Length: 115
Image (tube, rainbow, N blue to C red; front, side):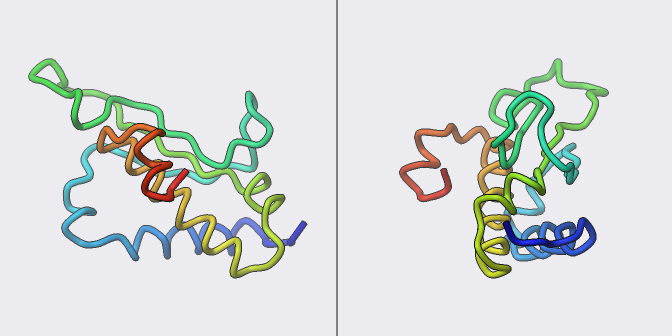
């Protein structure tokens, strides 16, 4: 497993967010992104979206706590052989979880190459 400290990994997550098309980033609403070591529930989970997708929000969606996207460092490092693979996997995982924020399901993400 490649060794990348938390600060370096967080930089890769920040870079992935910076690389989003500006028109897409502007549409993100009420979502916070976190880095954690690993999921308490699923050992090999790379990322997780928790919240109400934009496509499901209605007039009752008021004063809601932010959606949460978590990117897990240790499982990501475990599936990668080098820093370039980590960078690419982080980009894919960030895009995957943001897609859930926009209401795109896993089947469609798989078709698009982000599964």
